[in-house]
Image (cartoon, rainbow, N blue to C red):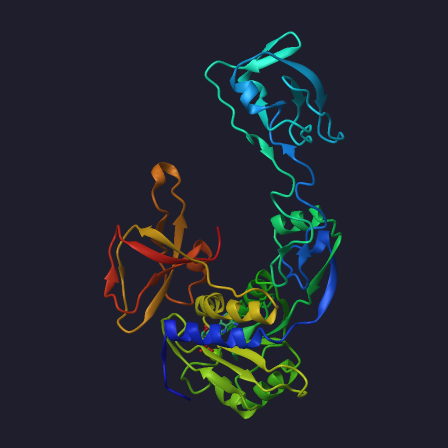
Length: 418
Ligand code: AMP
Ligand code: MG
């Protein structure tokens, strides 16, 4: 249908704008026990219920003391001991030390902790080892240094990973208010598709996009809803779009190229779609379609959709580059950006004038010697090459302007695994 192709950057911007617009609608909220909160999106802030730490705590095993006394290397008699879990001891008498364990409260009067490895012991006294110096405050985290009681520590929209779950636990939250996972309808189209457990006949292929897109959606925090395959026929597509109307987001695979049986765009248009774009100057993914269908009931927000090109690598790349950004907004999550990074290219790659290329590649961290990560393109037979794609862990980005990239150059990659 419409022939205007956007530059990749422009398409990216339009998706970001639509996502920002969509973020004004809040998804419904539900409660999740902490043990099931991984990957969910917080619907209410997490607030510190007390100072963190709640008392000045030692970060080392050693001796609480006064730094200026310790620095004179006087022998300091050990007047008491506190280990983690005990009430604060003390007060610390003038000219004395207090044995203390990691995590234990500092006795009143002490202003530093000398590490056990940095003192000499003589009977029931200690002194700082020769050549050591202790600063006031050393090895002590003051009360409230990490957070103050009542402070917001995580905003709603934060995605819950292991660290965020630990923080919620530390604040006493055993269940969390989270946004309901958005239901993402996955509609695969194509007369050539047969189910995964069927043996393809001549000219047929297995429907690998349905489970792949379901996995991508789940990974991005959505609830995949796989619809039956739609045939390349107007009536079949109309019926499928009708069924998908109750979803929160819609991914359609196939049927968006310029061929005779690419009927998805007209079907979307029949349902009153507003198209944000209908093609991008990129490879793979050029026929990508993005827009919104009007709400089916009037009381819901519009239904964002992506018409993804059917070749598996195209579908995956366009979902990762565009779909995931929209899905984050639909999920109530903070704005999401594709995970770009820089890596040093091993080998030459050619460009395609007028298209931003996304080539399946493998990146590898290079921890030794502070070198940047390296990236090597995976040999492939084009965007239908699932075996090559399964060996990749990133896309190598070849910008539209370049005739190609040379070995040794620092190039942009889109990381999707590893
Ligand atoms: P299309 O975008 O509909 O022109 O599809 C392009 C090519 O992608 C088709 O010829 C198939 O080889 C492949 N393809 C389409 N849909 C799927 C699918 N659901 N699973 C795997 N491959 C597909
Ligand atoms: Mg097709």
